[in-house]
Image (cartoon, rainbow, N blue to C red; front, side):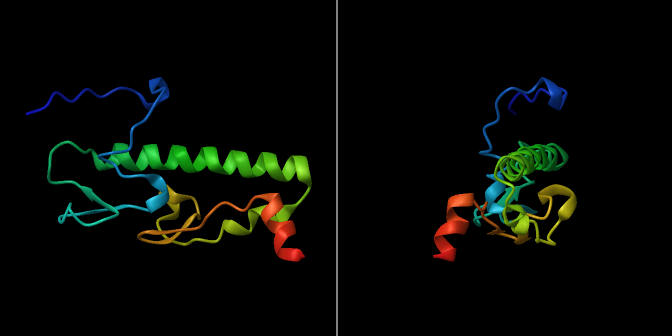
Amino acid sequence: MPLVIFVAHSLVKSIHYCACKKPWTCPVAREKPKERHRIDVLSGLVNLTTCNLLHREWFKFRRSLEDRMVSETGDVRILNSRRGSFQQDTFLQYCEGEGQYIPIVYPEMITENVK
């Protein structure tokens, strides 16, 4: 059995999302770990609460980036990506379903679409 150490998330400086899966895949826990976007909760290597907390932190970072872009550009259309209803407590409105990530909208993408 591998050694598992628990620390306060505030002490974490770097995260490798291998076991928890990448946040932008909008992963969920399932008993079939070989399927894409699925967190293997049966392996004993994953603590689902920790995975959800780390995913939420990643999405909070994304939200702060968007807020800063709006502050600097004045373009509130950047916030249009906050429309997902899937597990909002973890994915903060950036997922529409399992594996259905809503990409970030950059100001230049908005202006290119207007032309």
